[in-house]
Length: 201
Image 1 (tube, one colour):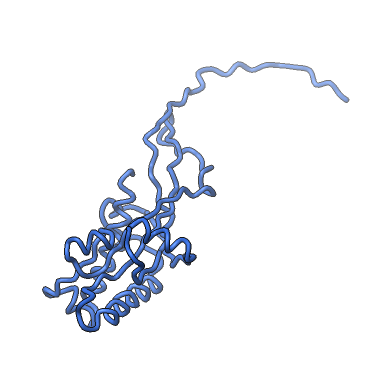
Image 2 (tube, rainbow, N blue to C red):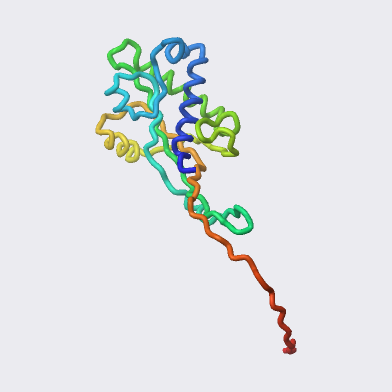
């Protein structure tokens, strides 16, 4: 499905939002009118909207070269669908707190620490974990903490035209964009047997 990117993002954001809201420490911030949000907006957009909470920003999409040679999918006796486009998605998770508030740095670290704990304990999403267009499908997503070099981190924050903020990157795989290209097969109409002579060497 071409909505796989949105469904992956919704799955992650719904999971973190639900877990934050039931956490004894963070529930007062994210649930019950606390005002903090889990959003797909990037950190700059959150601050422009005066939002506080967690940004789950899809900042890079890569093709998985190792999965490009998958076979076509047979739809029926006369049709095959081309293989899907296999993708790895990269998310920047950033806690955004009012910097003028007392204890804001500590609150950011608590919020990010909880995200690290949740995704460490729950690195695979399937079945009831899935949201959006993934609901009711057999999709399985794998989430891993992604190490970033100083150059990579700098490049991301330069793109936002902002100074660095406490954040981590996660890679989600494998996300398939289904092909809409379907080819018809020509069935065998007639088999003509042939005879020949076997010649010994």
